[in-house]
Image (cartoon, rainbow, N blue to C red):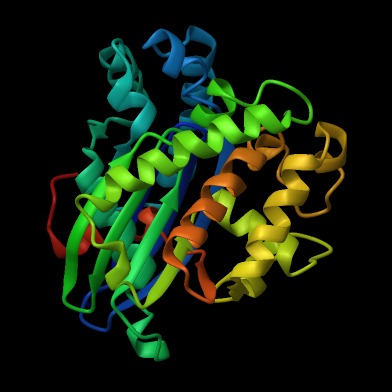
Length: 316
């Protein structure tokens, strides 16, 4: 029997997620047993203070305790806990690491932007070639604190860059009104475009044949473009969203009030206040690439972490 039961944790700026899965590297299959997400806003205020707030740490630790119970209940053989942008930026990340270690018994890994990008690419593209989706692929992972740009194909990653334009960071930095003013949106857009230009110095964006979007901002934009009456990952996964629809959804979300966004039937409560910034980042990427559409994947860094546990034989 080659299948192994693994548990993958992805702790970002806005959310913490868990995937418990049976992974068979020989058959090339990953079977979900438990996949969950909680918005804990670990990165609350990090862009301004450079520190993880006490209340944000406690929210994250509470979610980790619940996840640890699930890991034990499923009997996962190997566990990997990956932390990303907010933790990379925080002066008190040792406090965060100690808390996770005490709860889970695993050393959390504060990965580099390059490592984060590679894991996202692996999770998002593993099935694309089999679906006949043409490469090279540009995987864009819009997180809370950063966005990863990863170019590659079936043979792996060619180039990657992480830039600090996540939905939480851009909201805290620019979008202060409800809804944001035209001046605030313009300032955020200029910040995002500058960061994309920075990414383009490392990643040849123009070589991409297919744009693949992952993570909550992208899937929420897709849900709105698809006019879903409730969030449905089976419909969203592998959907193709025309670029004009991305622009339309972005404009609507940025013009909507908090109450109007909260009333959308597919909207997760933890994304209501930051989805406008996430959509703005996605719109700017779509405009920069000039491709006709966007492929949306529900598989992302979490799946990449799970695969890494059986393929790289990492300690855990």
